[in-house]
Image (cartoon, rainbow, N blue to C red; front, side):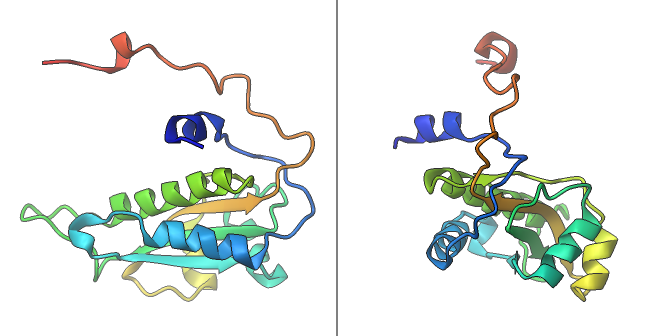
Length: 169
């Protein structure tokens, strides 16, 4: 499928079937993440693949809801590896966000559903995953097969026109 079709098809899935995600699909999701561009190609991402009951309990403790997804990725970056600009800006958050986006889009291409969870308790992840201070959690991405009742929100296709979002100079 072409990219525009893929990008229009993707939506935030909030209801998952009780079907595990295959190892083959997990590896493809990780490969998509690995090929994401990062500043200076430093590749500071650290991805936690959460699929055991204990791991998913950690995700549940850190988020409002996982929507019963059988798999979740915790996307982090290592601030010791992320590129820093001369004025001190750290690319880690941007890099991890691009990595996460690649996972979201690959999930859609594989017929899986996903959701970007930005509201989570980083302190819970830091404690339960024993993250050092240089490992910064950015988001949690539940992934799985959408349930039969899963549909995009009614706002999904509403897009502001270019006249409101694009400026030509």
